Length: 98
Image (cartoon, rainbow, N blue to C red; front, top):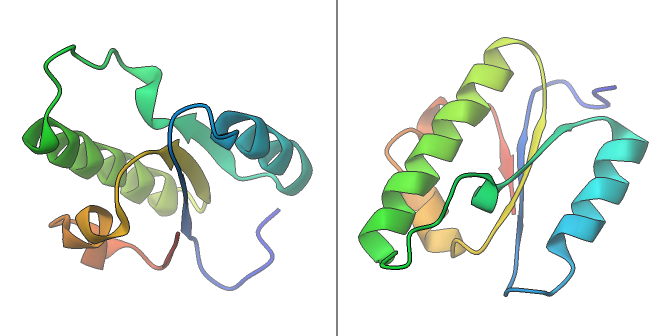
């Protein structure tokens, strides 16, 4: 159930093994946003900042797709806030919360 007047991308960031997935599962069960983990696709062993930035842009594209269907997205990952906000597609989002 959306409790606000616009669709939002919720980003839950933090270091590995900090409890992001557990917290996201609890939030998606209670509040209803669609939940995805940044690492759902295989992260290459040679992942570098350029790979992460491209992957972040891909995830934002997914959020825009959900937005077009009126769905919030809760995305967990390790992307720094600056990289998220610097993604070219971010202005197309109705809202983002990190």
